[in-house]
Every structure is written in structure tokens, then in C-alpha cells.
Image 1 (cartoon, helix red, strand yellow):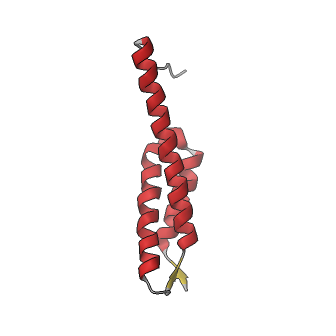
Image 2: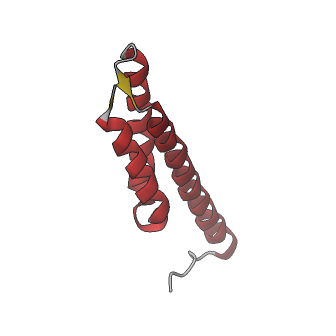
Length: 91
């Protein structure tokens, strides 16, 4: 059984997205999530000829974490703007 390339890509998108969550998390989180879902569907529909479901699930989980962190940061920024009238300063 060969690992599907999409599952490996999803896992790496997730790893790099967690490591670089604030500069690139907005791009890498959804990329890991959607690539992982696509890879998991391919592995499940392959009838046992492809492997990599663990890597795909890892990409889905890490992509979800990155998306959640980005959404939380956006929520904090909006709340700070609404409460103080100014965005959080980025020093």
C-alpha cells in the first residue's frame, strides 16, 4: 500500500500551520483541513489500495486547531476594538 501524497501534504500543512500560526495560519489551517478531508475520502474510497488515513486525520486535527486559534485571535481583536475603539497594537 502506498501513502497518498495528499495525506502527507495535509500533515505538513498542519505542522507548519501550528508552528507559524500567526503569520501564515490563516492560509495553512484551511489548506490542511481541506487537503486532509480530501485525502481521507481518497483513502477510504480506494478499497484498501491506498494508505495514509492517519496522516490525513492528523492534518484535519492540526488544521482545525489552527483555524480555531485564528478565529479566537480574530474574536479577541474584534472585542478589543469594540470595547476600546482601537485595535490591539502590534509592537
